[in-house]
Amino acid sequence: MTHTPGPWLRNIKPARKYSAIFAGRNKHVAQVVSRGLSDDEVEANCNLIAAAPDLLAVLKEACKHTSINRNGMTSDLHVPYSIVEQMQAAIAKAERDS
Image (cartoon, rainbow, N blue to C red; front, top):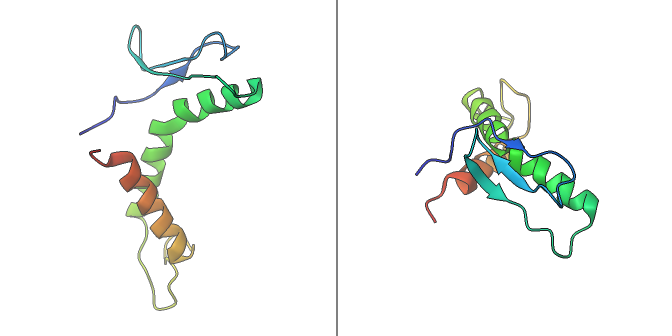
């Protein structure tokens, strides 16, 4: 299973009125529901959803450049292994079949 390729773009502001996220002309990938949310939350959610394919690609690329040394640190990115595990978990969450 694969997601719709990016880039994804959000519609114009305000997001409460124009809440579509799209991946090209007439290719809508998401519609943000804004019941019970503040205007700022709706705007932020639209931005986050639109950035999702880019964020996933960066996480995948970062994971390619990690190797664990004896101290539990990644030798290329110099971040704790627990962060690498979180990155891998986020990728798995984005790509799971359910």
